[in-house]
Amino acid sequence: MSTDRQTTHPVIAFVDDDERASDLFTRYARTEGLTVHGFQSVNSAQQWLEANPVDLVITDLKMPDMNGLEFLEWLRGQWPDLPVILITGYSTIDNAIQALRLGASDFVKKPYDPASLVELVHRLLGGAQPPAPALEEGERAMLGNSPAIEAVYRVIDKIRDVRINVMIEGESGSGKELAARATHERSDFAHTPYIVIDCGALTDTLLETELFGHEKGAFTGANAAKPGLLEVASGGTVFLDEIGNISDAMQVKLLRVVQEQEITRVGGVKTIPIDVRFIVASNRNLAEMVRAGEFRHDLYHRLNVVRLQMPPLRERREDIPVLAQHFLEEFARRFHRPAKRLSEASLQAIGDYPWPGNVRELKNAIERAVALSDSEEIDLELVGEDTAAPATGTDTGGTTIDADHPTLEELERRYIEKTLAYAQGNRERTASILGINKSTLWRKLQSYEKK
Image (cartoon, rainbow, N blue to C red; front, side, top):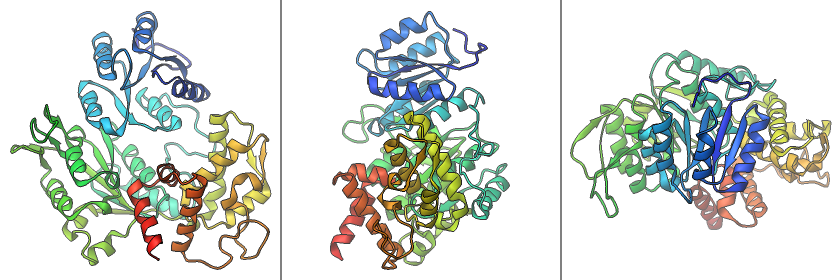
């Protein structure tokens, strides 16, 4: 099989026994200049691959006839340089680590965004990028030209040639993960590993095992030694999201890692040297947590070498039309809808709305709007009840969210409760829509009940 073939459209083999997932990715990828052949079994994929050249393979980990790791070993035996992406659930992260050791190019966790997966495909194919949207500039991951977002990019570009720890702060939904990825991808070290870990989604025990790995017999079920993500990422960057949620005990262990650049696996005694640049993020003010004794000052200062403050959307309102149009075009392509623009009334409404959920809330609102629209222009009523009325403080017959001048905390509570109702009480779905982990949602709902 030749992987350096000249082709107008890169050819991808997508292997997943879930026919719906295969169909969704295939339809979206074709709109982005990729030729995709979907297979519901490894056997059928193998037969086709032996007779047809491809540029990249994407495979699910759990398959009925052969698991993804076995398939990966077969692919490596046939075509050592063929890029392979493994799709895995979070509970099978150990297998994903093993896949990287076996030669997988990268792995993505379920549920995944087809657009993000397509972007990863283009990166792995060595710069064969699709035409950038008209509103996007070069490699910019964060859209917009406001002074606030330009200030973030200036800092990112100043440190592109140095491996230095970075702390990103900002409200939920303001784009901290995008800023972390931009920091890595715009650096001179973009070719090195980049691994994301959500500290708020794991207990201390799981987080320690994921970060440091474990030795055989370290606990029940540890039948073999496993490397941790810090080992896998050595030479590259680890992004620790929601670091403000880790316990005091984990802060002590992480401090040693950051200072000494070495780890000890759970159940082990030997230290293992690593070389990791840390990017951390929190929607809580870590400096205030330090003053309150909730976060170690020594760890804070080790991580806070360069600080990025992500502006909330209400402080970069000039970017709202740009972001809205970008999301509109993205979801129109993905859902095969004709929608191409927002009505003037809708643009006015989204410009006036305070957006307590920031960019993530705007993206969700546009996604719902496009899904419900059959026309080229989206009117106010299609944008969703959260943006159905401008923030004028008067009754216009719609949802007057700030008519009583609520605090930001109260706006957040109302938004969470509306999203919970929209998800019909499903907390997991609610957390997914809000872009927060389930434990954070549970804590917020508990605090509301106490008030």
